[in-house]
Image (cartoon, rainbow, N blue to C red; front, side, top):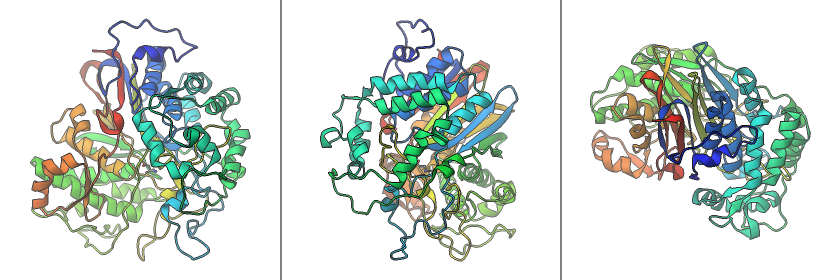
Length: 590
Ligand code: GLU
């Protein structure tokens, strides 16, 4: 996180008149209390950009896009023009929750064996697939920005890109997180001239505190501002993207060694031109009288969160150990079902079944308060009724890096939005002359079937969207927003969102406490991934029930959230510590 006073944010906007900032203007910490709308992101510059828009009369969508395009500059390894994601929106006037699916799509020529090496018939190693042209899908970011603003916003995309372009021109200080993300990708970034030039000046990561500028990205933003998103999907920016995918700019003088051949991709301009935003109905389920809205397919976030909450509700645990035990068991069951049934083309009938109380009863029957199930557990049989036995094994999911923003405005609209390049640094390739990195989202497909003799819902296919775990979630009470939250973290996004909800709604924590509490993730694997503090605090009691821990994770997720309190009050909440800490702000601080 880059800390900066709110004052700096106001100067981001050239088109708006700066509001007077009092001497008591707070710096942007992880929690803000107040009213009049608010914003939480992982990054202070992005939060400040969104706050600036809110303060000057923009609505939640305007502010969310302002923050998203700023994150494209300051968090270029997870965001930007080549990213994709999912937005859930509560429209206060219409009392309606809607979504935007801006997920990447595969090329029209994509087949189920896309990630199989024709030379030996074996799947590519994950890193081999990732750092290649093959992993890049058609990005949905720009179409999402454009659609959201047209549908619900009051500002033009051009007016929001302008300030972000200035941040790219002016630069920002390199902090420890930024440097670490480059260091973690040294060998991948070092293989490409364009990436080296931007992120490995002189062959090494930029020094701490040095200024990271990106004039190419500033130009890209200005071109999009001037010409619209057609410059990307139908124009020269898209043409450069396609050229980079088909001919990765492999360096003759690499930094570090890369263990794999770097394969070209097959994405075409036709694929870009064919890109369409989807607007699926949100998933919705009831939890203790609250309505939980989430993201439908191709994300598995909404169904998995709903299913697990329904199971927890059914099991009705009574003390802290039992609540956590049930949370872990319900997560494992939901992940088994997700693996078996949820992909881009899952039918609505199946999605409805998975999020129903009846299905929760069929699954909750496996949970004993006295002893943990042996993992992995098998998926339930969607065609059977009653407590169906376990029969199959599953491949666990992995993933790490994304970003999430939560925004509300004075009118009561709420935006919950998660987007990503998939891995930190996407496929490792900066598009030459354009300043943005390519996603590796297509590696979210299963490379080979994972479901034994049953069909795998997440195999590659022509123009198909890979299954995601992104879980932007809005919880309504009596039809009005109570909570909004989301997180990065690959498949652990689902469990992070679930755990924050369980902490807040069942364990009596405040929202900031629920965010800060140590996390654990059970995704239907033998061992529970846990932050060390979780294992130390709850491990003994859970192990006594038969839970197994391992591996430890330094951090799970980097969430943002908001709670809407009485009389128009709100709590904007970001991480106090994880990923360097996030930045929350409200329009009228209390
Ligand atoms: N690509 C992942 C997904 O869509 C998210 C990546 C991450 O958070 O690490 O689920």
